[in-house]
Image (cartoon, rainbow, N blue to C red; front, side):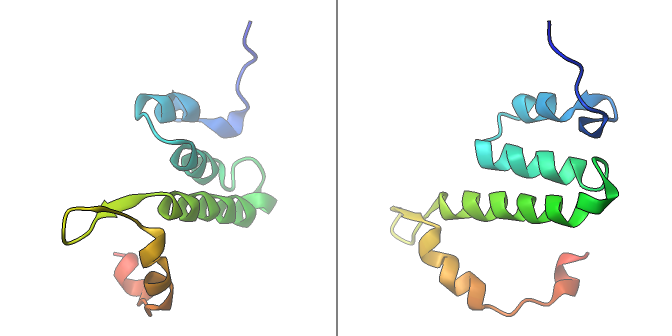
Length: 96
């Protein structure tokens, strides 16, 4: 028999792993969602750590993803990653 899930994974009407499975998310995206959902709920002391873990999984997803180039060929996003890191972003753009 399955053990009950910890309370930091049960908020709202669906458990995090049920949402991840329902959305058919990859390993990296699923883990990012898990850490985002539990940030500050497992322990207020681990909120920042959980958010950093989520960012780690999102960055890893980007590094292992691909997109078509101008000629329609698939190019790993990691080729574009250096350009993305060097771009200065205005944080207010992302807060809207």
